[in-house]
Image 1: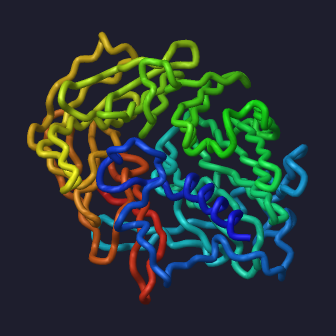
Image 2: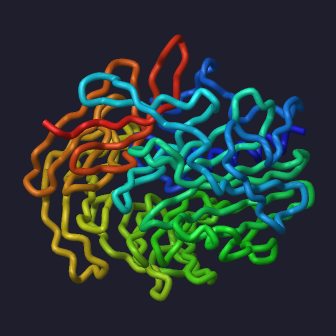
Image 3: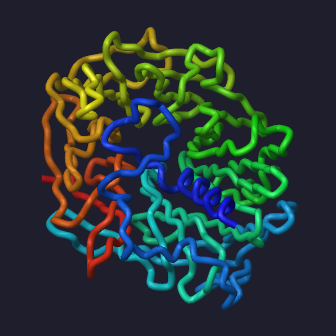
Length: 443
């Protein structure tokens, strides 16, 4: 049956392939574009993550290369198998090898076939994290695992795995987020045969495993606004879980098991939400319609426009200390570029009337207008194998370059005082290998 594989692919792309093109899409549509360098189709790329249902070694929730002690999630839709690792650090290792001066790349654990989820992970509580989608090698059509890694300790912090009986049923863990010591993610269970779906929302502290044993919110078929909307991207703090919902084009906030819908039709920011950032209870995103504006909301306050620059699109990033944004003027559809770019910054605030903006660079030239902020720096992709690091305090620029046949996803996952973490690929033995790079910013 062709329909189900296509729909499964849509769900997978929503979860793991949403890394965008050179600029934010002008149509403001679902954020499922692919980067020309990182996600280009290549027949030699390891495609073992979504193999057919061919039988073979048992891929149930009791399989694994070590002893992660999987515990089944109870009460899921019949035909789904969902498990949480209570000993995730035993699952796999993530070691590093040199890819040139100031460059390290991830060496995958040989027990797994995996790929990095672009634009995943981040820096929180002195941890630097990234997310892998994996399957155990040698287990034909075994369950998929979503693994949150601690880059410094080279071990998983958290892992879930999921499987289904096939047919018209799809069960997926989508977009695990980590921040302020907390994890949030949606579990999507869809039966295409009867047009039925459920979405469960999990949110809890990593050091309180009991908080992740059951969902904080269960959305049954009657609770969801139309069939096929996916909680595509996750964002988390200690108080709040936030989700980008497409193709509906909304942001959903969950606190204490209750749901609030933002970026909704009829609000001040009714257009497609892109590039969200959650700091505590404060959510910011791009309201992407005829032009891109910066919008914000909380669980208790409505969707509002935070920053709207006349004649310019605004593309932002924040780490909760600095707020930085690119102002793009004169969009050229044919060239898919802006005539002029400016980089601006301000101390992070939650009220627009408190914003004190200042222009950092008035001739900013980058391939991708999205960036990441950290350690008072803005970092953006300037070429398939280059990053530009801008000190927001004085505008000083530094270029970080990868070796040939190494390409970057965008934007980076984290920026610290000493390094940038970013997903990407490198070419080896005639095939592209998914990896994660750690690039030193020290002189």
